[in-house]
Structures are given as structure tokens and as C-alpha cells.
Amino acid sequence: MNKPSTSAHAPEPSDNRVTASKPVSTPDVVRAAVSRHPRRYEDNRYVYPVLSRRSKGISVGVNVNPDKICNFDCIYCQVDRRVAPQYRDVDLDVLADELRMLLAGAKEGNLFERAPLAGIPEPLRRVNDIAFSGDGEPTSYPGFGEAVRRAVAIRDEMGLYDVKIVVITNATLFHRPAVRDAFAFLDGHNGEIWAKLDAGTAAYYRTIERTRIPFDRIVRNIREAALLRPVVIQSLFMRIAGEPPTEREIEAYCGVLSGIVGSGGTIKLVQVYTVARMPAETYVTPLSDVEMDRLGETVKTRTGLPVEVYYGVAV
Image 1 (cartoon, rainbow, N blue to C red):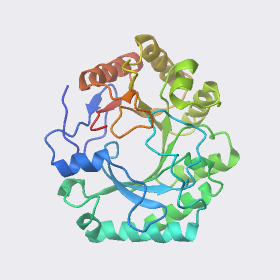
Image 2: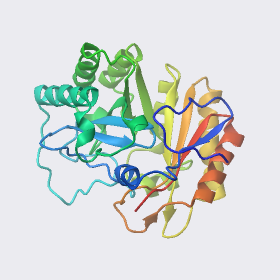
Image 3: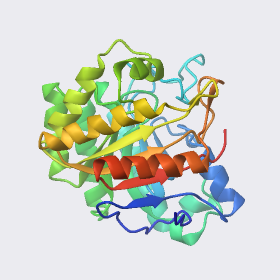
Image 4: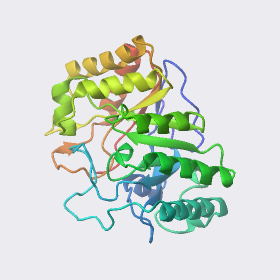
């Protein structure tokens, strides 16, 4: 399989194609930046830049869950919930000021003169998205709709219309009217939903996500969202106590994807990736490159969907 180096201008995948995003033969600074995604940037409370494998460039993170409260407790999550949060509330005025300042720094170039992005190659010095992610489930924040509207307004006032607004979400709350309204707004403003699906069966889902929220709700929410707009599926697979996911689990996962498409939903892309940063549990480790290649090919073959594979970098 062809494994191009990380690029900010990688081509969009076409149907029935597996593309790979392994940062081989790249400077150490790139590997370090990809391996570390701190939620704090200088004196900011909520907004931070990262070099993202999946964005293929700079992703401006917006953390609307600084309290670290999440309705999942994923075994691979990098958020250390044993450390008390410095901030618990979200001040949208402060958030807007931070976002405006960071985007201006990217346009002017000084963002790339300081850590964590100092020294990254010129092709990667491009803001590809503003991503609502962070220390919890972003759609659980009561002001989520207002936050995305402010992000769109700031992006547009700066003339960055091609920068996507991405919502990196566990798909647990899509049924809430306020979340549906926010997604409908983003549909008209270059928004994109990246919905988490890490399993094909309820048992494996509970092992990974450690939540009481039923697996059926996740699948139903993703299906209903995909009936209204193309969605991106983000799926992290790993070794648990040395064991990779079983073939049965992967077959069930592919069956869920095929079921969503079969019911009329549109899946724009499937992102298959593995552990790249220090996980919450030490028994979680990345799959090998060979295993990731095989997994990507299986998903493509079984579903016919476009697939991107992202490899482990460091743990």
C-alpha cells in the first residue's frame, strides 16, 4: 500500500480507495507535534493549535469541556481526569478572543515561531479546520450552538471561508433538538461531523467506551445524522492487554457501516486509526502498521466506502 507522508494538501479520497497517512521520513519536530496534542496553549483557556494526522495540517481545537466531564470514559483517552481542571466554566467572549487571536497568528505566521508548531515544514503551515473537541463531549455543552455560530462568524470575518468547522463527537447526543439545530446551521457553513464508532458489537463498545449509554443509540444517532448530511466516521482500534480486535468484531463493525448506508445514510469517509499518544490505560497499545493496512483493506472491501488509515506514532 502506498504510504505518502503527512501533507496539508493530500487529495480527497475517492470511493473504494484506501489512503494512508503515516508520517514517515518526516522531521522529528513533526513526529513530536503529532504525538502530543495538549489542550492548553500559552495563556489560553479554550483554544489551542495542533498538528493533526487526520486534518493533514493544523487543526485549531476548541475545548468547550474544560471541566473534563464526559459521558464516555474511553480506555484510550489521553485526558488525565485525576488532575483537577483549572477552569470549569466556558466564557464565550474569552473563547472568541482566543480563536480570533490564534487564527490571526496563523495568517501572519507567528504561530509557527513558537511551540508546539515551531519548525514544522511549510506545507503543513495551513489551518485546515476549527475543531470542537477537547476534554469531553462537545455537544454536551449547553452553549454548543452559540459557540459554533461564533466560530463561523470569526472565521468568515477573517476571510477563511475554506476552513471547515469540524465537530469531533461520540454521537451520544445527536437526538437533542439543540444539537440538531447546531448541526443544521453548520450544514450551511462548511461544517462537518466526525462521529465516533469504535466497535461493531455492544459488548466490545462497553469495553472500549465504559459508558451506560446504549450502543444502539450511537448507531441510530449516526444513521439519522447521515440521512441529513454526509458524515465522517472516526474509529480507533487498538490492542487491549496485547489482543487486537477479533475478526468477528471487525466484521460486525463493517456490518454497522453497511447498515447505515443501506438505510439511506451517506458516509463521506471512514477514518481508521490507532493509538498515537499516551492513553488512559497502560494495557492499551497501538496496532502495528501491517495490522492497520489489513484493517483498512477489510473495511474497504466489506463496505465499499472510502477509507483513510492512520498509524501509531508514539505511546
